[in-house]
Image (cartoon, rainbow, N blue to C red; front, side, top):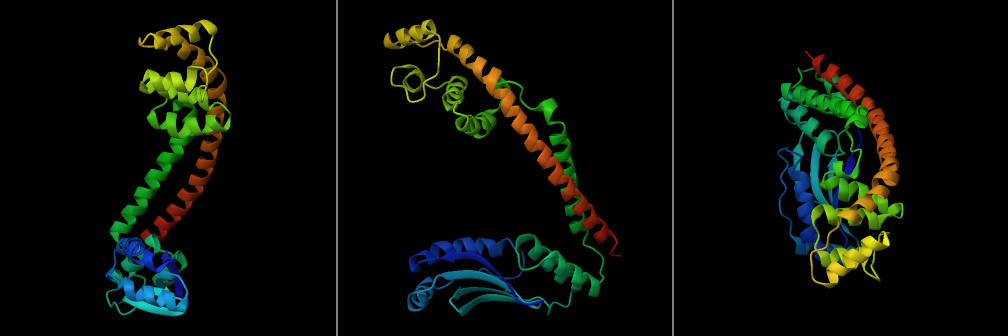
Length: 284
């Protein structure tokens, strides 16, 4: 194989080096290999950047033998640390490094691992087998859940949890032009203060007004003007006729289409994972 390079983080300005370095060091740390995420001299790197008028790239390179972590400014590479992968005589340990690099970086691929296994047919690591089996279990669980989505997904707004109300339904309703109704229901459900609710949805000049029966609006405005607690029961009932009656069926239909795509994608994933598992178990 030729040399493969992955850019872990980029500092566009000299003053960015110290901050960006933490991102790169965290990436090196999760590789879980003997490669060290040593601290660099940010001032010296900054000087190189000024002289070359180039950004500084924290890179990871692998040529099939040696793994190198360094900083590249233009064509100049400052090596921070390196690991002699090919020099590791313990083949099981070497393969473990390759597996971790494949999982947490782009410098080692499945093809690289297959090539290693062909030349070095050693038994698979039980931990690696267990990890793939766990991935299969999780993927199959996702497939089952998404296949059965119509039976368990919220049928009415009241069935939504906090995340579904705010992160799923609200953005969708906003795109449909019904942000006011979704926001109103969040406010009612989560107990927003009267001032915020009335100013946003009910009073004249409201930012996100909701359509209410005149009598309902008048009663709410009267209570608010008198400093009394506003009763939202009637308004909630009217808004829910729109939310549950018109919006929820459309939103559920979209969710079901997404579920179909998820099932299709995860079925392909589980096939690939099972093939990977069979390959691992086939190494005696």
